[in-house]
Length: 150
Image (cartoon, rainbow, N blue to C red; front, top):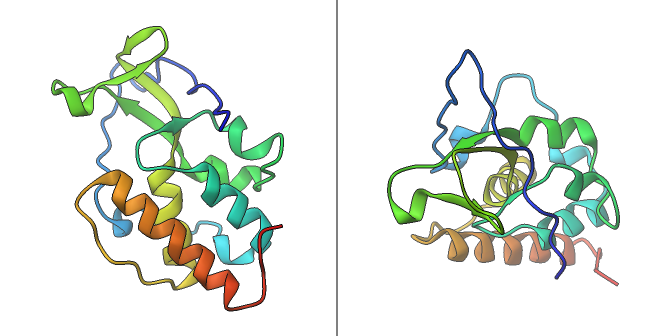
């Protein structure tokens, strides 16, 4: 799969990058936000197929090309991420380690889609495993409604 390179470096707000934690679906919910439930099933499925539990995507990856998600919803998922001090929390791209990055975290998108559609998913320990469970649940949700991927 051809992945879009991760987005913009340096997301300074007030001089310091802000750190965000991504642990539970409840943390992804914000006040007065647009819902995935109003998006076409084919678009949701293409977004879900792009996502994984590890990648921070360039927002353009979701609004251009084959994936045509609503830009306003993708903007809600776009945030500043900062590298941590442990190997699992370092953000890197093909050019090396980054101190911060503006982008869309794939697992956050998957968890929010599941939450908005009322899909219950089993909690897994690993990010990749959690993403895989979400993707299967989204596929099953739409398969039960007669919506398939061509």
